[in-house]
Image 1: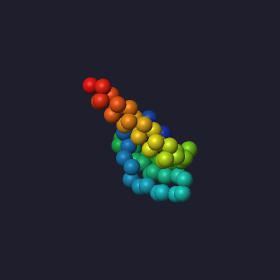
Image 2: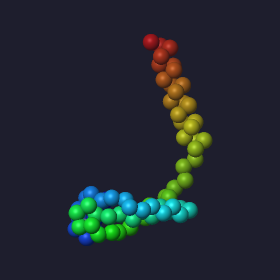
Image 3: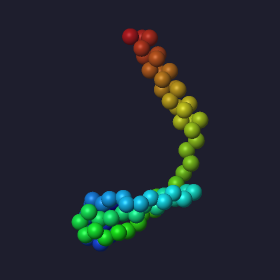
Image 4: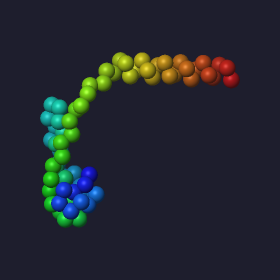
Length: 69
Ligand SMILES: [Zn+2]
């Protein structure tokens, strides 16, 4: 995360607030010691059953491969 003051790339997260759809982080630059905040937003909901199904199919595919060998 780039510092907006001096463009330094290293910063330390000093505080985190969790809201319903947003995570706010207070960061401090490792070089100039200035503080700023970043907001992470939940962009898209991923359906867990769909993901799980994908994983099961992959496992079945791998199992079939094992039988051939
Ligand atoms: Zn800085």
